[in-house]
Length: 222
Ligand code: SF4
Ligand code: SF4
Image (cartoon, rainbow, N blue to C red):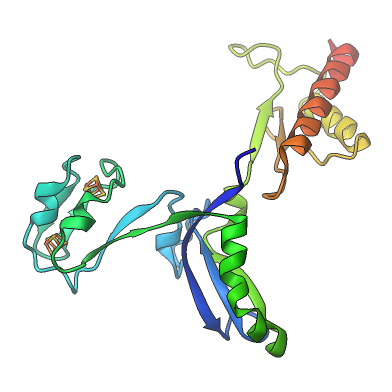
């Protein structure tokens, strides 16, 4: 089984404003909310991305020449503009910049790697009643969030039961009886959002429960 990995932008040590005691902040990358007032917008995108520091940039254009995707253009205000649609995150521009004005934000870590890293400060957590704060992007965006539409046919989208939402609500009940939390949501859908730490075996249990619940709902309603 592949180790569970998350995308983080950075780790900040000795934080004293994000919870009790001395804390280590882990900034996840990827957030579905994208609030206009976000204090760490570099963590919104769920992929590694190149960041440009206009104060360091000498507008030499070396990065734009090196970019294989032609994603960079020189401009007067910021120095370089990066077209996020074209950028593939290859990092070639970072290697050639003579002024370290470019940086790749976001790297994958396993749970073990991250816990090894944050545990370096465990003595401070114990003495100050501190710990770890997971912030930046939304940790939930790293896990699975899926919804399945329950309709008679893909083209017609005709509901299965007599009443709107009848079939997803029935699935919700059946799943709850099996000890699994699934949620009926609009558009005749059933949503699943298992926790980030879910194992492959637990995923199999959910899929089996969903399969048998759908079969039972069909027997009752079709
Ligand atoms: S990361 Fe690669 S594709 Fe993106 S701007 Fe830099 S060189 Fe171009
Ligand atoms: S290579 Fe570096 S200094 Fe030159 S334009 Fe690009 S970002 Fe600016």
